[in-house]
Length: 383
Image 1 (cartoon, rainbow, N blue to C red):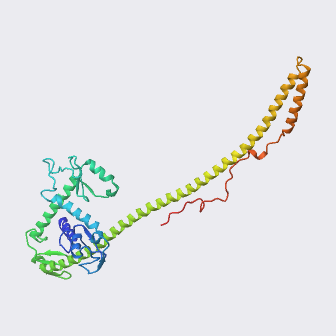
Image 2 (image 1 turned 120 degrees about the vertical axis):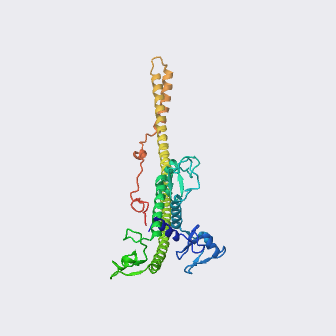
Image 3 (image 1 turned 90 degrees about the vertical axis):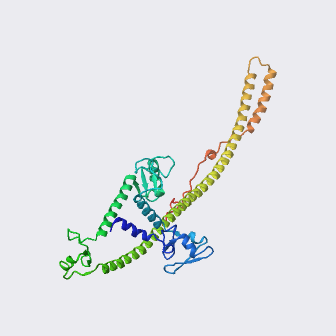
């Protein structure tokens, strides 16, 4: 089968069975059958809470937003875009944008307003892209999987399809027997060999068992029936596979959402532990400074008591030294003796107390029983 015929068969998959036209915003029902969004609105107007499938009569419950909230059939949408993008180079006017020069292979970038020549064609977006847009297209994570073709390859594919289609049409139009050099039209079909034959070949090489010769029209009718069966099976499987792809994409989105949530919970748990530790740290720091101030106050009082004794002793020494000078009068000596005696009595009242050995003791003792539950682990990642 020629490439163009294959495209026509694929095109049949992309026809809505309600409007008999290409899908427009295809929506998937619970029974996996697909229809245009507007067509579903025709059989399930706004306000209804269910829709009956026109193909299998199975009911699909509609959510609050109705038909618009049904799942999109992205496979059909992308396949329709792909078929459209392949068909476009077959037309006399490949794009809605005229070439920027006399060269038919020069098209303008339809993704930006730079006016630059297109270097490639995105088969998913159906857009012509210049060099800068092509690089940007390949860097964006969400569309990195899009199929890109250079303008030359894209046009060559179209020309190949045209030539193959023309050759197929010529062969089908002539219907000549392949076993003769002269032009003899085929009129019968050998079902054993799957070959169209003329009358001469049917009565010669294909006249005996296991060959089975039937009229061309009968063979064609059986062929149509077989093709119809294959088409129905392909459509059914296409619905199943497209729905499976969409379900997988949804699971991937759920994975991303749940992964983000797990990351958020992990950060939150870590912040809670850090906050608790910082709070206890601040409380211990306050207690540490308070006890330090108490001990420093005790040491300051002890130093003041000792300093008082030192001041008294220094005064007594100075008074005694002055009294012992040769030029000191006897009266001053006696006065000095009385003062020294009084100062001595005061000095005897100042007791020298040893500083407690533990007054300078201060350290942090770690709680040996403290553990993050369990074994310093914040938690675990489960699937």
